[in-house]
Image (cartoon, rainbow, N blue to C red):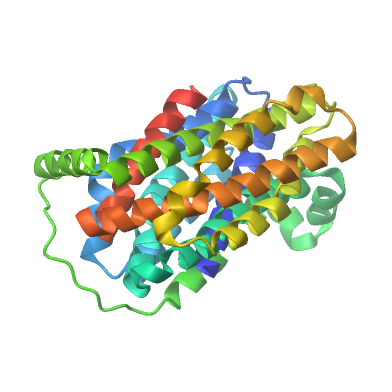
Length: 368
């Protein structure tokens, strides 16, 4: 849980720092959603392969290796000005570097969720997922807040005034990226402490063409299963809307409420308390009653429609808290149901890869 929380925290803080870096380099406005798009693209392109990787090696080791790739992407972004690229193309390197982090995240995901099904019996999956999902959503929001804090004038001034950091970096965004690299390293240390579950799967296919063909068969299996079909459709729509809303809330804070980037990004943090409470409350729902939360998802959609109508801080915070609470309560049982059906019909790694493929494909569509 700690490894997942730190890794996801860094992913989302890096997104805000990268937006700030693009602004410092006077890059085009469309590069921010393009970064999100390149991150999601890695999940879609690698979906057929990452499940086999997750089921071929101990999942703690897979998580460590993919986290190291995220560190490499972070360092590539950090070195935008020192590898000889012309200034007008440096913003594209920033976008590409975030895509490398996306490759690490795509390979990391089946391992982080698959290990839950190896450690817990089906009766404990909802409770286990309520903690994992609660921490994941919380780290997404907290990471956005951390990114906003790191690029804020007070924190960036303090960082740049430090003799060691000041000798390595010269702008607020660069200082933020350097700090985030250390968060990735902290996640990697947590990965090393994950015990082996000693679960063994049959030898995995290594031929790329057969892997794609087999993976497509897995996609069809999960979509043809009635419970898998409902939970997969719902979570696919949920995460597509969530990724798009992350971009919209930042822009909403800037254009609708008149906030700077650092303060606008922190709006996501207001929903953290509600999300965590909603996730914890959802942990009490038994797996057989997971579909009972579907109306909560519809209610969340209606609450989001109130965003253009609020201006006062108390109403903005109340709206975001309510949205976060409904999101946490809604997605945890749906995710647990999907993982259970996937584990029964396929395997831990492959079922998560199918889930990621569908969710990220919708993110590609909605963010575009």
